[in-house]
Length: 421
Image (cartoon, rainbow, N blue to C red):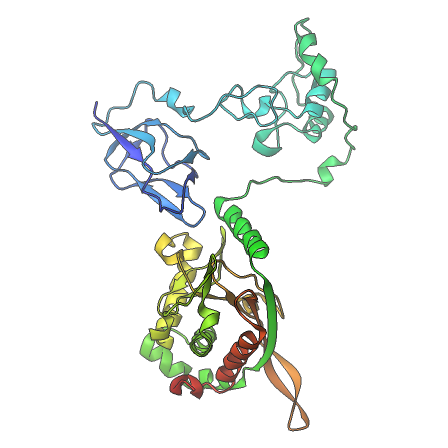
């Protein structure tokens, strides 16, 4: 037997640990070389772990949901194709930590099956009705049995009575000390589901709280007449798509307008490092993208050097990768300014939160026909409300307002972007 270790890929310096999602192979099953065995979720991306060798899965060392670090061994493959004799035992990996049977956080495979773990009130009700442990299917978190599960089982009669053994009495004594209200009969009409945060969602929450607590966030607003941009898109859309193979959207205009303003007011493109202000001589624009895992912000590197077509293609690529969970760490690292487009979901107005360590972010919203005054006359124009949040520690109101006005002027007269004026 020749055993080959399956290890966690090298994680970036900013990622201390990761979480295993779900194994695609079980012990004893054949494995092809480079076949994806499992996905590993970090607080930024999802990494795929391919099989380093063909053979048979001999052992799973770390179970689904386990926390791992760089280069940690998580499974073993028998490269000679001989299934390990201990393969069935490997189904309960060593990574599963023992837990007391009475703990509400007890895990399957660590002292009992899912249905063995009952909430205190549910366990008391089962004991009072002489129901055997494991006779009621659990629907709570990690398969734990709730009061509603016991009520439903009693109503259906689909339970097995526990033998009236004297040994059962001591087990009931501590449970009788738990004081809980009797579950209402209609508990099934008020379901709840408890789902742990993914690493990405937890990281997003952490960074948003960090931004709120460390930045002096202020938001300035303005409105933009999008008619000139819409007219230009309509005029050149067919030729643009034929030439570049991609449609021209609004985001490329917003990116170009943002870079135009950042050049005029460099502090908007800066960041705080201790007591220093770091002025960046490049323009890496983060584009907030929604994904099944949560919000991610991939970066357009050197956006000032990109054409409209380059920007549209890259944004489309980011969107597809985000949906497939294929964004790499290098695509999510860095950034000097961000753009969040809530308009695609119909948002009229919002106050975006700065993405640290950046110092400003542009919020773009839905373009709607609205009544506005031009030359003393009320007219209908496609208007978009822009919001720019900024760190007031280093950005004064003057720079913030003038920066947003520069974006507005560039969008209302796109020719400015060509001549950089």
